[in-house]
Image 1 (cartoon, rainbow, N blue to C red):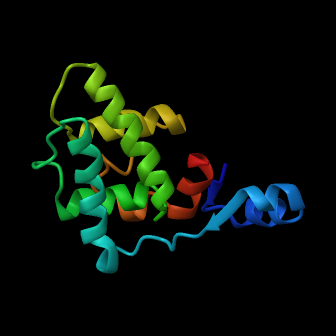
Image 2 (image 1 turned 180 degrees about the vertical axis):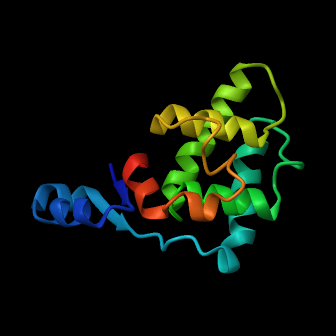
Length: 140
């Protein structure tokens, strides 16, 4: 069985220090999200996951939402995917078939312990109100 390690360089170094573990893992590294470069890929990712559970996201996927999602997840693919999956699961279980920005605010607040009304998904000045590195620390 082959496992894939993703995203955490210190963990990768730790795994490499144990020969038996190293043989079981293929390290994979994802560069940080850069919206100018990666917005199309981010949109494809959102649609891929949403389509797999028959969730409508047409109204959600806007440049503003992409910027908020990217910032809230500290420009990290893994955090975007984690938040997306959690949000899709909760919304699907509630019986809805369309994602809204508020759904992400709810899940972000639940994960980080922040107030839903004051998050990168709801604050008008989210880029200046929330430090991306600090968000990474509370997301991890």
